[in-house]
Image 1 (cartoon, helix red, strand yellow):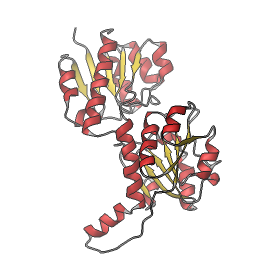
Image 2: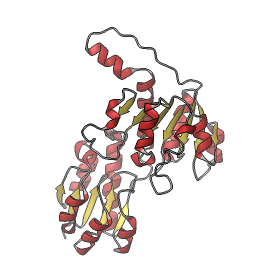
Image 3: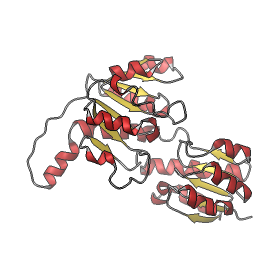
Length: 312
């Protein structure tokens, strides 16, 4: 039996690696689209597929219900976050959903510091000056001795903490699960609320999954509690912050810089308000997009699809 598969992850498609040959070995009938795919597009086609390897596409109640009316059995998420997939509806129709936990942590943690160092060392403006043959020497700052607050000390957050130690940062953390052994080894101070962390952090790294308890965890109600000039790094989910709160913080200079790999609307919309600020750095959701990680994640996504379709 030849299954029909929809592949939408652009990272999976763009990077070479063993994940392609492993997928091709199964002789699936594969359609490839470049995500993220909107609800209205998926709704028209999803009933035709037995399985999907998806990115951050709109697998809403409406889409999954339509898929259940057709052939859909499996949703394999290339990545970790499941906030774009209506899990209740998938469960209702016995459509299995699997993701790829534990594969992104190193590369995303590296991206946190790539953004952070680019900001405080003025790498981007200095590069642009030099491209224009202008010898302009800006003054940066150091992160040594500063305090970083990590909101979400899971796999990625722990890797951020390890690197923060290497840079001589004081590490504060908030997470619903407390890992005492890890905190003792890496000098992490846990807090059971975010208010104390955001009030005492020079840098905030957002590394939480997105659900209704974490949505807009940085918001208009707590923006005034931020330490003046704080740098916020978001490599997790755009919905962890209220965009209006970030804009207000930037306008009042309460926020010294907002460094993000994720946006509410991806790809970026024309004239996005963040583009008006020189102290905002945006990368196009590439935190996990390395050759090494794409291959690992791609292999896991294929393996998850096979396990569902062939009941392995």
